[in-house]
Image 1 (cartoon, rainbow, N blue to C red):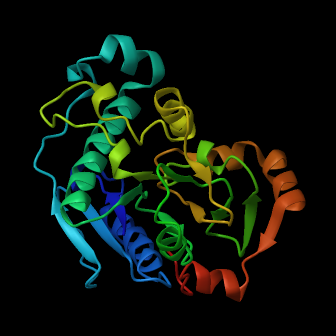
Image 2: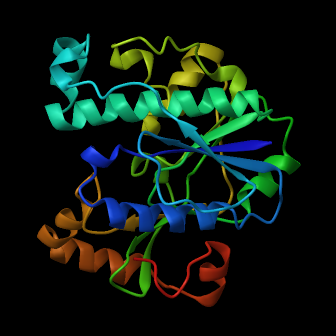
Length: 268
């Protein structure tokens, strides 16, 4: 069984709590639209979001406080080097929430876990594919996906390396997960899913084998005004580069894609 882990920031850390909840609702509807019922969803929260009532969704209370960047133990060696303070403390918080959700998924009998950002959409083929390949020793990564600026009715296809653009891109066998000390203040202790673009390389270094590429377009990365990555601003600044991407790799948002990713008339 596949466990989808959906971490959400606390209300005080959200740019817009109402909009974040609307995006979360769309994500959960997308996940719960799976063709195969061999899955569960674990929403890891500090402040209870607006509930989507579904037997597949379990809301898991996250009991730990938010840790400011300079209180992270490896601040000087990791956080300060790789991130801004704001991003570093967000990454630490998210990484720890994901591992807390993984623990709940294991307790509910999941064999594979996937971290999904609370504003992404997932193909309804995913749980069926995992169920049909349940002997896979390591797991899979999302190689193909779409980028969608929700203000427009077309997508940008990403035919390779989607795992470098988005965090909702790795499915891991629970046997790969490290034991987590939830009292830790080391970013490196909770970063299993955080370095999403290089997870398969890290697994290969340890096991001499690694995650396999999923053979279909698996996720839609939504671009909107409160993206944590600020991708919406990047698209505006690089207008001509973005325009070329639409011309070369643009794809109309068809009815079949809407059905596959459970996209309603109003996404946001």
